[in-house]
Length: 373
Image (cartoon, rainbow, N blue to C red; front, top):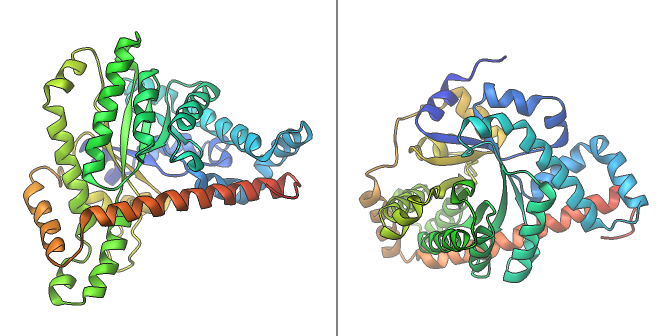
C-alpha cells in the first residue's frame, strides 16, 4: 500500500477534505482511484459534463461496448449518457465505501450533476435529482444542483426528500447565504417528512479561480497602479468572506435546533482551484484557503503540484474577514461591483455547463453511430 504524500497528509491533518475533480472508467477499473485514497489522501470525487466528455472521448475503448449495446436496444443519446455516468459514479461510490464509513459518512462522496439545461427549471431539476439519486442507488453519492434562482427551491425540495446535495455554481457571498437558507429549509422539511437528518450531507461549492479571471481583466482595463496592486486578490478574499458567512450561520438558533436533531453542517467547498494565470503560484487556491471543515476539490494537475511543492499552513482563513472585506471595498472604489461580477459569472457558468453538456451529447452520438444528438 502506498504511503500518503506528506504535503497532502498535512493538508488533511489541517482539516481540509481533498476531493478529486475528475473521474473516468479506467481510473476506477485500474485501481488508480483506490490507490489515490491512500497515496494522495483523496476523500471524494466531483464530476461534471466536461469531465465525462473527456473520459468518454479519451477512453473510448472502456465505454465502446456499453454504448454499442445501449444504442442497439434503442436508447437515445440522453439515456446512454445517463447509464454511462451513473454507472461510473456508482462504481466510484463503491471505491469510497470504506472511507465513507470510516469518516462517519462525511467523506467518501461522489457527485453527479443534473442536466445543466434545467438550471432555470425548479420542478424539472427536482425531479431529475431524485431520479439520479435512485439510479446511482448509493448513500455516499451527492447530487449537484446549481445555485441559480430556480435551483434554490429545488435544493430545499431535494434535501427535504432526504437526498444529499452538492450545491454548485456559487460565486457571491449573498447567494451563498441564500444557499444556506435553502439547506436549512430543506433540513426542516426532511425532519417533518420523517427523515433521519444525520444521513443527509451537503457541500456548497464556490468557484474560486473564475473570480480572479474576471476581476483581473477588469483591473487591467482600469490600468492604474492601484488596480495592479489588487490583481489576484478578489477570489481568495471572496472565499474567505464565504467562510465567515458559514461560521456566522453555524451560530444561529435555527442551525442549533437542527444540529440537536443530528443535522450535519453544509461544508463550503472550494472548486475551480486550478490556476488560470500562469504568473500565479499554482498552489494558491489551496494553501490560501486552508481551514478546518472545508473541502477542496482539485483537478489532478493541481493535486500533483500541491503534492510536489505546497507549503501547507495550519489555517489561512480564520480571522481574515476584515482584510478580505477591504479588498472588495477597494475594488468597488475602482468601479468593480461584486454583485455585477458574480451575476455575470453565474450566467456564463450556466452557459458553459450547457455547452459542455452538448459536447458530451455529440461525443456519445458519434460513438453510438447516430446522425445527431
